[in-house]
Image 1 (tube, rainbow, N blue to C red):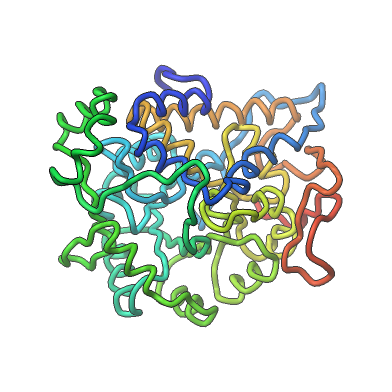
Image 2 (cartoon, rainbow, N blue to C red):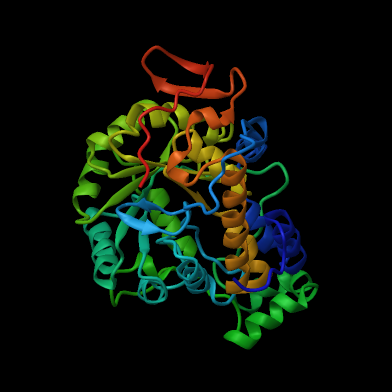
Length: 408
């Protein structure tokens, strides 16, 4: 499916880092405080092994599954991320790439492109929202997304406040005018390829977030919307249940690490949950999501779809997550690096890397489809998993404990 411009997600990251101004790349890295959780999200996958078989692998493997009732060609979905100013086409390029590879895109309410344009590029668009503003304002945003054709809702709760980073937080101006651009000029001029791409397209990046406005309303700036979110009292579980009831279609709750929260999401009427810690950009010290996945999958996986996001860099990571109870994974930084490196083609490149890695791993495991994966296919060291918020103890538990999985 096209020519490869890079062979691994790690190479995409290196190319993105060379291409982007430091402040833009720094915003992609994100991560709170020491970056312990961000690092563990990635490193934990390397602690898991495989138990391959040496004969009997089918000649063709089926990578397809269903997410929120929609069939996707591979168990990888685009996770919603905020203003994607790494490339002028932003979320529209990502949506086109996902559509070309047969998968869905989660669109952030903090995105730089309006939901109408993204749905036009990929009908399998899942609109993401935070608990932000009044109920009337939230309903107006949901109604706009529904009217635009969004086919599902993602409610994100795993974002509280990004504390200071030990390696420094990037400076992001509230708006791009002459006064704010002057201090950034040397860094921008040092990356002429990125700057020229923007100038050719439409000038400088826009920092407005159109999906935070109701249809026809004025577009707030990113930090204007961020300030509104910070001023909004955190939701109760009753608020979360109300928000679920305000959306008529399928819905996923993103931000689960605890078993009791997973059960509350089920009680609130959600069709799916994503085991997530916001990519390590929330509370530092939260365990890697792959450590929390088996307990959550065992608790609610027979009743709702369980997804995972955080730290996925290879197709083999996807297979490990599926074997431990996930229906699919959501990727964030991986596709943003592809977008920064080579636009839509770069995102397609990343999805192709993951797809081929999934296929190769299934072949080595002797599996004919992702639906055949079980905990017996992975080697889980003692003490690897975490069972948080569950009756019977909180902390490390041995074994896999990934029961009740549902694949499509």
